[in-house]
Image (tube, rainbow, N blue to C red; front, side, top):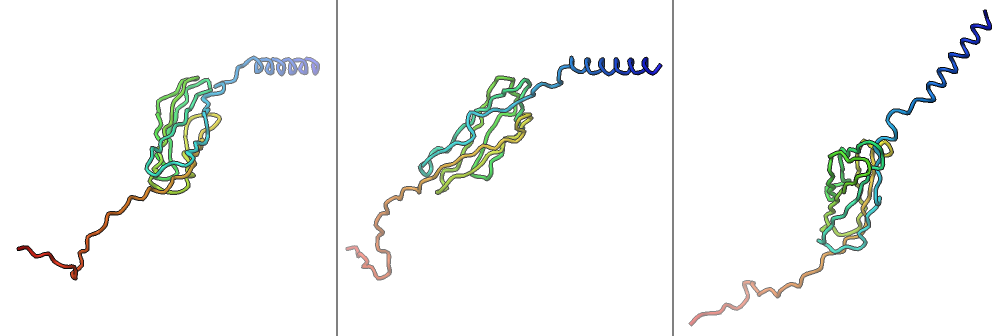
Length: 154
């Protein structure tokens, strides 16, 4: 009797393991976010120049990728992203506009939030330097002081 129970127990164990081995994992890899670059370097950029750059996102997973939001690290960095689902293998572009009227170094970030299994929150950066604004020549100022000679008409 003990041998019979032992044999039945082993048989059930092997059948259970065998059944689990034949099951495919549920969900696969899911949506996966891949970027063409993680940093955009403007280099030296003129004050007031076009401060727009782009990051290309590709869904390298096997399910639709949904970008839920893109958020700049401050008000001078404004990202724009589409929230429509991105099919596996398809791409979308995130556009980032930086306010180049702010002189000095650029070191800002944009946080991309999505349903990606590999990077639910991905941070991209923009770097560079905004050059000082060109000085405009000043025109001579007419002397308006009370002691200035007054022209008299005839």
